[in-house]
Image 1 (spheres, helix red, strand yellow):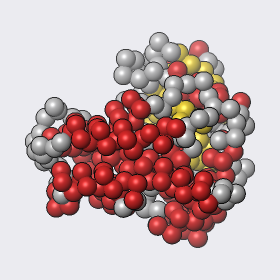
Image 2 (cartoon, one colour; image 1 turned 180 degrees about the vertical axis):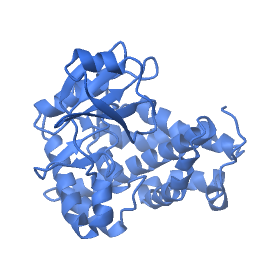
Image 3 (spheres, helix red, strand yellow; image 1 turned 60 degrees about the vertical axis):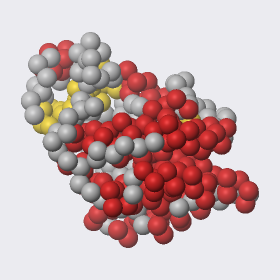
Image 4 (cartoon, one colour; image 1 turned 30 degrees about the vertical axis):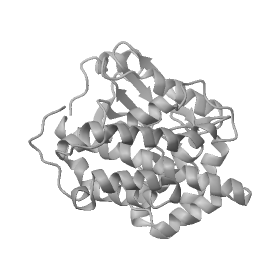
Length: 328
């Protein structure tokens, strides 16, 4: 992975002219990352090339988080025309790998991650777009737009849409006042810092919405198995201090958000494979179906569980995605 052509001049202009660059693992987007080293100094170069990417949302949320007392990367330099941003380097100690080697720390680290969300939900929400019905529906439709065609399924998409609209009503009603939702808050986007705190990454798609969304993102992690026991303990910990009625309503909305998110991710992972040739994301499909089926067991989701039973029966859910398909 070679640095972008504009990187050398960008770094030179901002006092890193003698720096060495090495690639850092990225994500599912067009963004690329490079570690920048010059003597004892370290930084991260984000390459967010227009028109595919726009680094401004990342910069906006990073500054909001820092101003609110959270550890987002400091922005050292930016060139929005080229899509280059020089960031603070949080190192390589991700929550994911730490727990792989130190499973005994799981409860303590997840509790700390829950505490961070509770603190975030106490500060005024960022000045960004809302997680509204249209956004939730666009994401849920990724299942019928990508997964179902890939599996050659003729499904009742209108009924799917109607059920989601009904399910989302109490979720959207509970988003007042809204909180900042980072949308990808999970073990691969949380860095363990030397001071014992958490460094936050991958929040450029943030919206303002429901406090349960980031919680379900972390506890129903698409890329790491979180046991039912840990999920229940952390959910109960988040809800400590809530009345029984409040807790029951939150748990219902949590299950709806989990089902919506997991439905979306099944669609996204299918799209990444079928359209973009990134077949490694199909390895996560069994986990995604397991998480979705767990959410569908909640009584509030009975109509959606019935839709899945009618339109995507269990034997289909575990069928491999054919690789010969083209984009719809």
